Amino acid sequence: MKIAFHGADHGVTGSCHFIQCRDTKILIDCGMYQGRRELEEENANHFGFDPAEIDFLLLTHAHLDHCGRIPLLVKRGFRGRIVCTSATRELAKLVMLDSARIQEEEAEYKTKKARKKDENAEPILPLYDTLDALRSMDFFDDVNSFQRPHDLAPGIRITFYDAGHILGSASILLELQANHSHRRVLFSGDLGYGDRAILRDPAHPPEADIVVMETTYGDRFHKQLEPSIEELYEAINRTHGRGGNVLIPSFALERSQEILYYLREGMEKGIVPASTQVFLDSPMAISATRIFQNHPECFDTETWAVYQDGRDPFELPGLHYTRDTADSIALKKVKGAVIIAGSGMCTGGRIRHHLRHNLWKKETAVIFVGYAAQGTLARQIIDGAEKVRIFREEIEVKARIYTIGGFSAHGDQKVLLDWHSHTGNPDITFLVHGEEDAMTTFAGLLENTRVEMPELHEEFDIG
Image 1 (cartoon, rainbow, N blue to C red):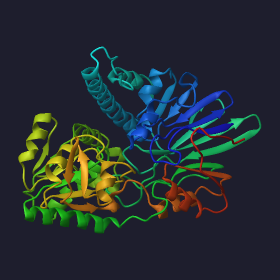
Image 2 (tube, helix red, strand yellow):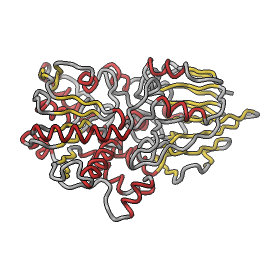
Image 3 (spheres, one colour):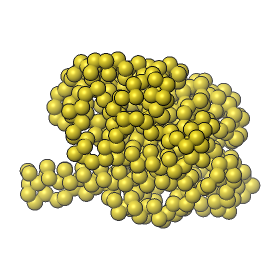
């Protein structure tokens, strides 16, 4: 038996891990690199294995950095089974189709640019296209329940545990039997934390011999959730009083729905004026919200109670869905509105247009409610840049900037340590999905386990 690491090694994107047990080859996630251009170029590189030889792909959840290269995997020869929860399957389809559209648009733009210099230039091809994304859906199989073992192949059993990160997210235990060796290998996936709206708390993990876990916030603690909600309301009300717009760069999955949930609560309690115009300016987030509405079985007790009462947890007065590009462009004229748009790290999407039109205004507020990787536009603004470049234009940053960490979908150091403490005393703990400082700090806190921080494509014998 062996394990190898082909993404999210000393970084937070591109998750892709490999397990071999006897002749069966398994991937856990196949995500896209995001952030700096040199990271994005990694997406086209060799996977580090032959996709045609992979028998199974176990998908922890539907974020792009965990599922974004699945169409490329299929394009390059994968013909195995992709196993995940039903909610993850629906969300992954949405994410992959959106990614394919972006790949196609970028390829078309680069081709036009190249042919301005040389009309005979070869066309630039997308990493994958819409057909590749659709074809990949043919290989998906659902796991319909948590904490129920499933036999994947002879000598291989899998069990999914609720990770509490986004809708349908899971940690995955693999029980491997090869000859006289038996190993329990546990992958955390991305872990959420307790007492958040919408989702149940992460389940306690089982004991394991080998643990592979994320360390996104392994070196810090989040703000408490309640003060974060209060800060959100206060920022909106202050900005509304100035007549300015509130821009919320938000991930389409989970964060957008969470913000809608708390805005609804704030309006119902009279904390936020019910007359506030709210625009969900993201076709992907709109579709994701519909998927959330179709999966109430994933809700926590509080959200389930809202649903059972006949109310929609994500609907509020003054909410507008702006799918069409023309409607999004028209938002240049609005004042005193809340605009929720992707992407959360401001690496693309409609939020860049809204920043271009609002970032230089003193009455504007920009509220960051999620993680911003190094090299992204969001991180530049958060780190205090006085000017940023958007669409080849230098834009002054005069808006009020808020960073509210309490909304993170990732557990902080305390949550990660508590989760690991329930895994027993694993022989090895592999730390992934974290930047260097976070991993190193977290590694120093783990006891009674050998800690490894694998390099890209590094392989280990585990039995």
